[in-house]
Image (cartoon, rainbow, N blue to C red; front, side, top):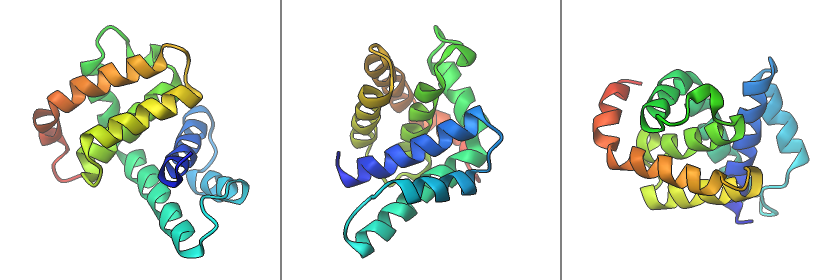
Length: 149
């Protein structure tokens, strides 16, 4: 697994646990960092930890708005019927290409599909790809509601 994919995986694990428990995100993040080696290079490791931190703490305050957009573009799947792992993969990719805008759309979608292959069900990669494709096609319209966040 590539280093940035590992960082996304760590962020996904933290967001997933936050979704399913009342554990504090900072505590989960610290514990996961102790369990996972993001890189052997100290400078690179710190950069990857920062990347994962940005994802986690960039998404958490926007969870409701991200979920609303996801629900609007996956109308066949009510949000409460989307598996928590898939919902968090969607949040990460959507946040990366739409909110932080530091990751190109194609990269964010490809990374999300890779995470879905690792953590999701058999149908998760195609579901993730389809929803993110819809979100990407409408991103300018969708992100007008995120201005000032």
